[in-house]
Length: 348
Image (cartoon, rainbow, N blue to C red; front, side, top):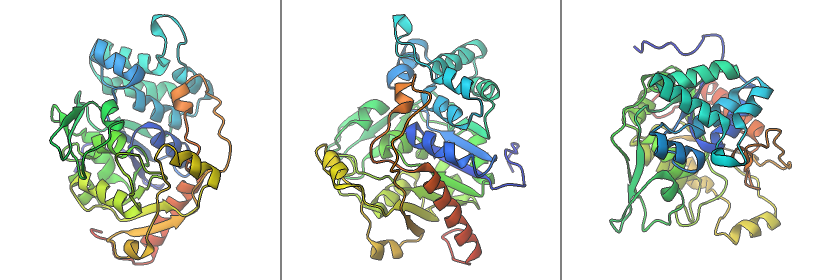
């Protein structure tokens, strides 16, 4: 029994695992359904402002944590402050929120305290918790035996062969609060995002896969919309789900939510020029899986404007993107169907 009681009893309890813009977007909608949210963030980010702070100050990576905090904040002006990026001088490119979290860590020697303090300042709904407090770097080995290190390089690498091996250096220890959030949730959501840059460094943390397999929560993966050239070429929905479970080391999924709506021909052609294709699905294959696959039209057809446009990274969105409200509705509908229809799942 965990010493941490993270949720109340009167609402749906949702734990989300991921990092980057996938988590940022989905959290903004999930908080409209419940106040009982835990965002578990991968800690391998080493690009941009975060990379500089890690290299120069030895700090834990604040960038993805900051985005989740901002997504869950109910204070618009403070959201704007934490996403503000300096445009000149020695601080050029740094987000204020990254500097705030790093300053708290250096002052107290405890990154978790900085996250808690920022949570109070931003008046967030729920909690944000690093999936590990170990200062880790992501590493991988492809079929050729070549080893690549650092999340930024791996996220932009073309792999040689299938099923690359991933690990963290040094070996990480899962946050006790992260384990508690998985064990105490009603729903655990694996967010869409870069499969190997954002999700792998969260799922391979020792203890996370075991917790996902053991929890009584229903576990669902929101599948990506497009493939990534050189990494997930020709992947369909079931391929993404299989890779999620391979990385975690356990068949823990109870459900997979995927998009059934086709983007416009114009957008598809634009993406195809960069080697990115819409993720397809095979209903016959999905029906044979151990999880319940739920398809729905999940594309956003609106032009996306960000009020907090001082942060170019937080505002970056692909043209083919999820509608966070539609995804959130699909998650809740899938959960209600699964819990009321007596459908057998793999470990519940």
